[in-house]
Length: 86
Image (cartoon, rainbow, N blue to C red; front, side, top):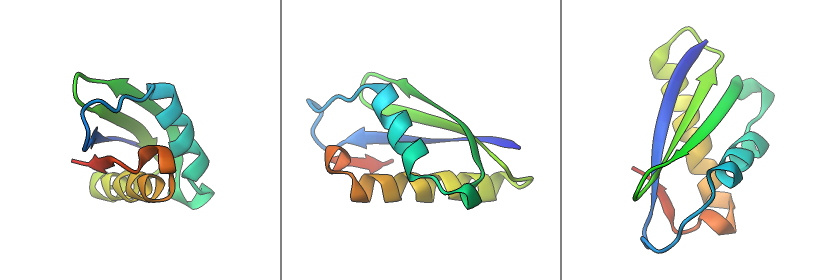
């Protein structure tokens, strides 16, 4: 199990989201094969940090899984259309 994180930010600074909404979207987008065990989202002044435990022994693999999952969730969720992984 490896802890990893991804930071996302809106293209329009006025677009704020509740961290729990993003957490739920990440959970909903995860497949069992992703190995996502726990997700927490923290609000920062101009971004959100997504932290997750991924079932992997390799930190790079875990980071890649969370980054890919986050990008996929952003790509298919209208609410996140103005957000990007940074």
